[in-house]
Image (tube, rainbow, N blue to C red):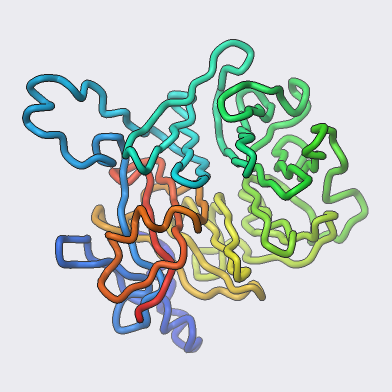
Length: 355
């Protein structure tokens, strides 16, 4: 049983939360659309689609393809964690085959990015893709961040055993990397890839401490959001590492975390946090107050979540998934979620509203 829904009954005195955290969704069918929060509340998030292989991305293979053998490989996604996007593409870090799956949306194809030699991936966890085509892949087996220009290896951040990188996020001039080994965030100059500083520092506010910083996201104001799996919270810092506030604490009720992992921030300052234990994604307002959650570990249909890990917000590829939107529902941006088990390895939700 999912702990969060059962805990919601204790929130009856909070009108806003009680209105948003109700019920479970039903599996998606040809005529049923899955919304969060479910009716009768105003829908804000709709489950649009999911895929776990190239075959699912394309739709079922025809009988001719099966007999003739023109489609030999289904190109499965095995155990994904990090996810990112660029125009026309989605990138998925797949930890078991040690590859990055490049999903080409226009062609409905999945291509495996699996470099060899000194660029060989060990355990790719997260990926960030820059506007100039640079890719930054955190690798917890190599304990480095591998840097590529498109698919050409450029170099690596961090000497062997110097750090254990997990999350990565970019600004115009900097690279932010969470370091599990040293319990900090490392900030690099993007131009020369030199280390600028780390945070938090000894002597900083006790609340600024990090225990197991896992994922990182940066909002439009340059604030840095860090999910701490070991501390059961998300900390927010200024770009220079100065502590701003904490979201959440250990627990199973709304606004609390049991195993926070992926984190993302939309253009309006709303924060998304994946909780791998309760298996839902919680949404917080710009002030850090809980708004709602979505995902449904209790079923296997549309909107199902199963050990979710990574999350990314995508404003550039909405058109590819608009055909899945319910009549009258306008999708403002996509919410991409990876699930490490189950039949929905990549789930695509849409944030929007009904006209």
